[in-house]
Image (cartoon, rainbow, N blue to C red):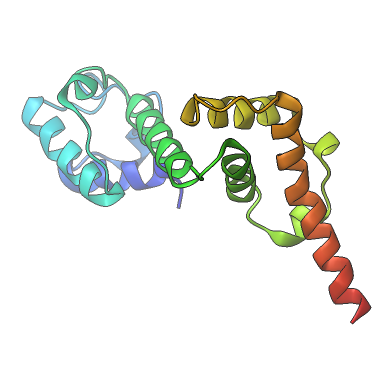
Length: 162
């Protein structure tokens, strides 16, 4: 179930909104008729459902359902990336790559040149952010990403040979 569907179900359950009225563009106040108490109840239910904490300063900016869904998605992405931090920037690059491509067969079919350049750049930048004291070159970190695909391909070939 998508984040939107989960949020929609919470809105329908907690404030009694009609499901067809809950869209990404729905205004919390104008379209769904939420007052401050409704929003507080929704946020508590969302925090419980997604196991996150939403600071009040963010809640104040939730004008539409999309605002809530976007916040949850960003929070999930950040939490996922935090789990990927390794002891070095190269290990972090490998961990993030495995999270982005969880299927071993898919990893075995890829090479670094088949990955979107923006994804590779983002992985490298994240590794540099969480390991600011390291001086690994961009090429070294890209090679660390590529090694995930190469190792998976090698393991797959070994299985075929046995």
